[in-house]
Image (tube, rainbow, N blue to C red; front, side, top):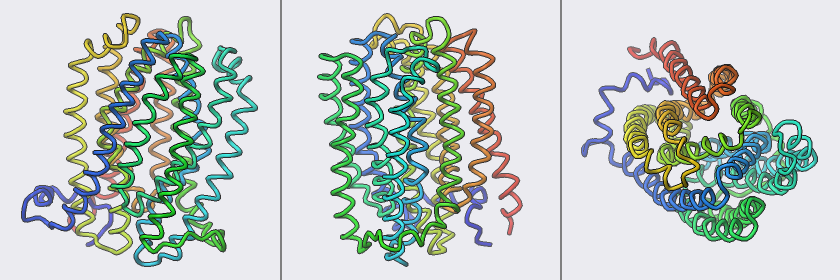
Length: 449
């Protein structure tokens, strides 16, 4: 029986996907998409890490922790600004671009208008409530101005997320790679200049400037790629596609909306303890390298979702199942190797940030273990999204968020950054077990059909 998510029945088929005799068009199509995505991300990630090392050494661990908390706050507000529209655009455009390009264009128009409105509202709220957040939640009144400046970064990132989702849905991964490369090349010098002359405010302004350039490049590129694909962007009558917001965007948004605030709340627990921003600086180092360890899985997520959604829309279920299972195995393997290498090199990595960050090594090791679990589970998340089972994703994310908050409450006040690392690992262990249980209960009975 061709069930769209019966990927766990594919153990016998996994090796055939990678073999020379496998469906060459499927393997080649994914390899090209993934290859371009990774090529752009590698340079961007390397430059981002170099910028973070420079920033940490110049600012010191306390100010670096303040920058990390600003970014966490923006990321949390950004979830409400984005409303899951990037994911919606990727799935809908990938599924409809060939079979109903007019409808795909209307969904792009709806996503663009909604992202602009939601991003604008949430950015204004962050600007207005920045003094309250800085004083009452973060215990750092000096961060008020930087939080207000970061509202511009929040608005632009909401639009960039939607634009990138459209490009992913069009499978324009070569173009995305060039855009990532351009943004990475801009980020490093702008960050260096900003931090060197204006310290923490300069680092925040650097985020805004690079996001503004990124939005402009993305805007021009989306227009070009849509014309090339024969997908006309339509704002007129786009409201008629609003059902997609409820069936897909709302649960996608809620899934992130429970995870983002939980991450922010756990970080707020850390910074509100004695020496909290020093501890946040230590945890921020681990967070930077977590992004590095997970960059291949996160980079592959867009081509994976786009291809799975396209196959799902065309009922190409044999290819769908092969691609899904092969990616689960590949992501687990590549993330394990990357995380192990970073964990082994942890003592030398933290030395690059300066002597103030020496306590970051054990935190980094724990976060690397958590990254293996989270990256593998994220592949299942793309499979769930491609079949529009977003309410299940919401439930799984809610369990993770609850576990993170509980463990953070118990551990952070006593162990600081190390406690937050243990809380993160514990939450992802539970999340991994729940994802495995969900797939077994939901799809295990379908394996022999």
